[in-house]
Length: 176
Image (cartoon, rainbow, N blue to C red; front, side, top):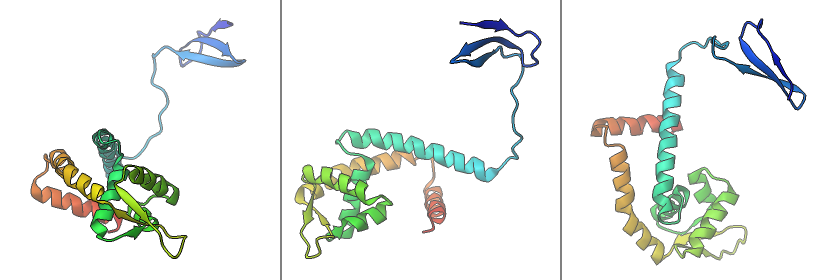
């Protein structure tokens, strides 16, 4: 390995190594690296905080639904079907979930293999209607208290009024 000492460099680079014929400098921490000046933005700070909360919730929900061998998207599809009260198309499920058709197909495949949903034949073979099975209804009934308890515990630091405000503000961001 070729090593050369650089003592006159203003960034106080200690050593310069050649890696794949390219110089790699080691910084000894004596001076702050250059930084761009970014004006403070409450909007950006709020968005970053919202993304951090979303990431934390995503990980916690992955853990929760993983206990049942599902993801939050699987459970969401079950809840959409339950709320519809009648068979609906995979495309409609995808629109409500904001998911691609291929992703919905994979979700429904797993739910069908677990006998939580059933695909129905249609005259128009391009359309797949999906409905909850009795096992799917039972699964939702058995897990709803746990899912609602998780939501209640997660949002517990907010008062009931703050929860309503948050709900309305998030709806506004979603254009609902």
